[in-house]
Length: 145
Image (cartoon, rainbow, N blue to C red; front, side):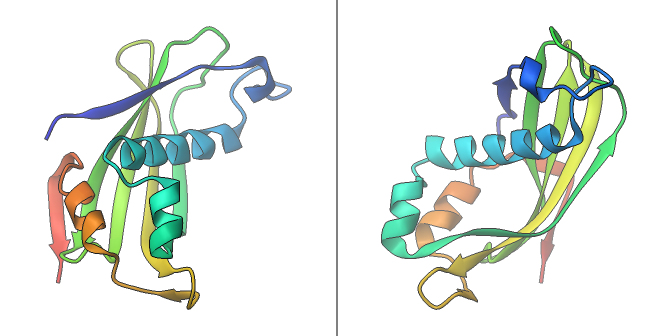
């Protein structure tokens, strides 16, 4: 699979009083990257509403390495670390990279799918497996059996 990255822009409103990126922006960028990937592969918000399912997160953790400042060139990567074979549970990682090759943060999320009508965890529709098959895999990717 080809690597997937979303380019993001550091805005003035993203900065904290120390004039570096607020911690919550890293999480927003991870969500933006995940949703952009799904959308680009046909798994849109409209389709999820129509099929009555959507993603949920159990855990979101960020390890901060290097500060990001206004004017930095930033991209957010996406890769699948592990998943059940039916993609009902999964772990993704975002490498947040500035200025070409400096890893600023590593964001890891554990998620699943919810039936929005029943409000219960569920095995997702076949479209999810189709889309997830395009996710870049981490070098140590593992299936959860």
